[in-house]
Amino acid sequence: MPTYEYECDKCLHKFETFQSMTDKPLKKCPECGGKVRRLIGKGAGLIFKGSGFYATDYKKKDNKAESSAKSPSCSSCGPKSCSTCKK
Image (cartoon, rainbow, N blue to C red; front, side, top):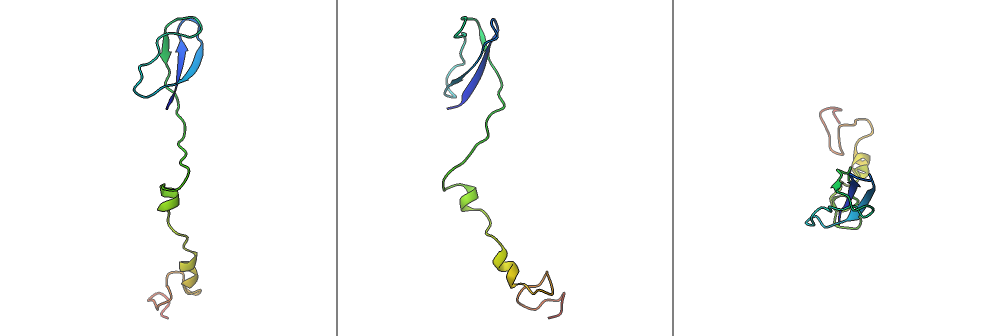
C-alpha cells in the first residue's frame, strides 16, 4: 500500500498515512480537526528482490569466454579467420 503525505491548512501539521490507492483522501487533521490536503510526494524507488525479475533472469551473460576466444593480435576476429588480420 502506498504512503500518502498530508498537511493541515490550519495548524500546518504534516503526517503520513498508509492508504489503498482506491481509498478517498483524508479530510480532517488528526491534531486540530482542520482541513488537510494531500501533498505530491517524490515517491520511493522500487526495489525488486528475489528471482523472477529482469536483473536475475534476462540479464546478458558475461562475455569473458567469448573475448578470450578471440585472437590476441586482432580485436575484431574470433577463432576463425577474418579479413582484418588475414589469418
